[in-house]
Image (cartoon, rainbow, N blue to C red):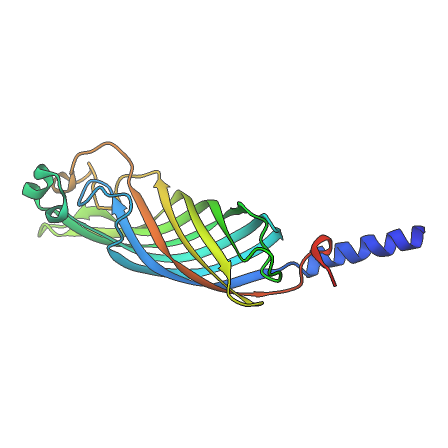
Length: 225
């Protein structure tokens, strides 16, 4: 009996360590910006964005995930419903390179290798670091000089994912990034011509579709073979 229990524990440990289901794939969609310039809609993609995703399924309810996303953002006061912004008529473009890691939680038990539950809504929470272009100074001719900066954000979102085949799955999700700075649109009080006012931090969002390939066996507790 002891030998049987030891063998079972070893099998489970080996399965959990080396045989978890992995997911790797890509996603495409749109990004938008909410700040001191342009529209203030929280869900209004106006730039093409995309990236790569990796997931490590801990169990049918929860997965660890890591992503890289290239997120162009832009804003134009001419597109805003705010009359003051329309008259001000500023615009900007920037590109964010974001690395994020966090947790994905399924509302239903979901296993791509089983036909019982072929889709589930989910929520996600991550911590992200991103690179962006920020204004640094103004030269003698009046041109703004930029520098690369890094900052943090907290992506929070919802989605729905489903099974295509034993090794392919899709997802559609939307997530907003809560940032800790106010200069993604180049707004800064260090340069008078770029002091757009406003005291809140910027936000950016991504909404899109992903396709992933899964590999590895389910963990011991879910293995029916």
